[in-house]
Image (cartoon, rainbow, N blue to C red; front, side, top):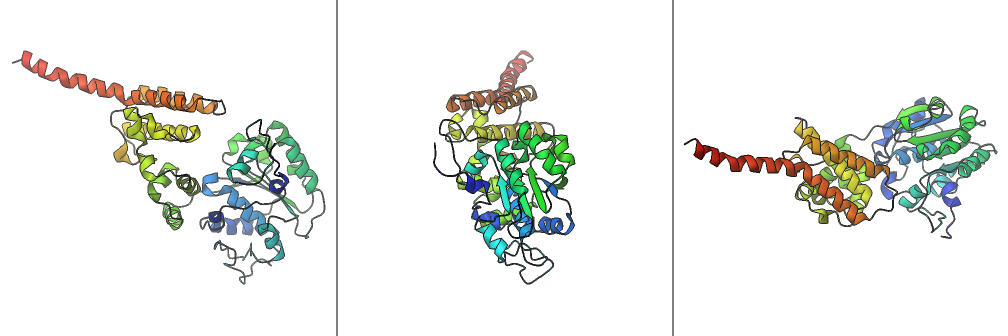
Length: 375
């Protein structure tokens, strides 16, 4: 059992990656939300790669900020330059200092163990099992009990859950009553990548806010400011999600390595994917299926440079390969032999282009023979 305490994660916001404090595309949505949102429960729908968790934390900080609203005195004061016209969160008041120091008494964050581990946050783990991907019912019940206590600084209380679809059925049911009848002064902000994954009773009790991906020029400029090489290729590979592209870069994935995926699969070369986690391999192959199918039907590539896509994909084989990838994805927690699994998927992917290549070769070799017979 790892002895680090989990309550540091449960009881407040944790140390964010440095770039989380400077996501310029969040500022307009943050300002709009502070100006218009009046309810007690907000459901933020957006990808983690676009900054959904960072938005939830900044919004929570702004709700608890003690700077008078509509003041321009503190505009731009927040570390990292996330500016809003109201000056909130200011980054300097007592509440903001506590929030940024991860000790605010009126804020609670609930995330699965796996999310905490991915962010490098302290968490109590059982070495006999993998980090949980669920928000457990006892964690939700503790947060609900905490919400009913008196606010420490008089600005109300904020409970954040990310991602809310990580709650199991029991956890979600435990939260329903609080969503319907929250304690006075309490607010909840929930984050999800897909509202369709949630219970209808959860969705109906929240105001929905859709967090759009950043405009491509803004995302590219930000990635370049973070020192990401081949930012354009990685951003496309990440589906326009700059935080995902940054994470890939920090983990050693280069633009040239990503762009080499289509040709490597067509050659049946699994060595290219040595050291890649299975989840990334599956993501890369599913995106290759999308681009191969799209270009084969007259569309355009979205995730890979078009010049790198092999021609002549068999749509039947492509469909079969995609179904295989889906089956593996549904069982991602299975203790696979990763090298063997990847080799198998690459071999099947090679067949998408191999069949067409053989047909072309057969047609080419037949032409001289027919010409001779007809002469």
